[in-house]
Figure: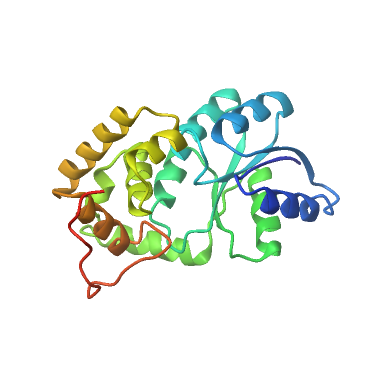
Length: 224
């Protein structure tokens, strides 16, 4: 199985490559540190499997999935995340990814996920499967941020980390004006007023690495 590792952390890529290359039927054929380089390397190396980090510089992960599948509809894409929650999992799977894996999982589980996808199957953890089943039973389980597009979710998450409009624009290769437009749309869709409201919402909804509980103190109302 030919594997492309797409992650913006060089040490993680190198460590993962070294581990995967010890598996007799695996061959890491390329690495990428952004969505743009991921697409370039996929065109050149023609991988069977792409290990795709959900947060990389460049295009939104949902858009990257679409770009990769345009190159090869049969390409197996395994989303990899360090996030402690799975709020984006369903979106990625609906977009065409064949699996969703937490980086905190065991290496043996990753091997199993890659092999399963390489054989044409799909992979999600038992924990995530239970969450998805529960959401199907509960018709009222939808959240306001489910109305956001993939790019809007990405911008919201970056706002929640305290990045400025200029920082976000540079990271996503967008103009500051475009980022401001996304921010306005997000505020409207979530029925919020300020950047502080957005940050607090994202934290409480578990959209960042540092989630807040419902009793957490209110964030500053100063605009970012």
